[in-house]
Amino acid sequence: MQNKATLSKLFGTYSSVRIDTDKLVLAGHSFGGSTMIETAYQLSENEQPHAVLLLDPWYFPVHEQVESGKLRFKCPV
Image (spheres, helix red, strand yellow):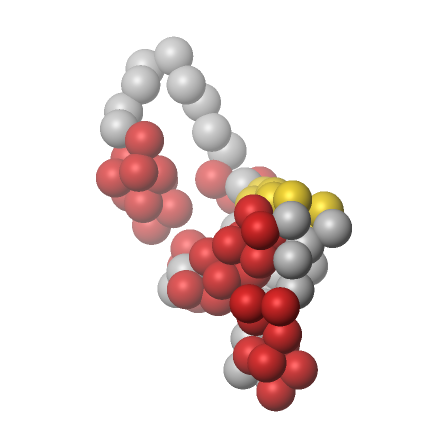
């Protein structure tokens, strides 16, 4: 699965860590919320998370892309 390869690149391989990549959720607060919007957008269709949870996101850095329809997601946001 493509998600497992991506996670291995980011975090390495740990035998004691088990991540169900089919249910991976990206979450962020404030600027982290804005970062998660951009991260989800940059991921390929095979790497899309199960959902994106935004907690009081700082909307300014991405508002133009969202309002113009350039940012579209295949998962709940």
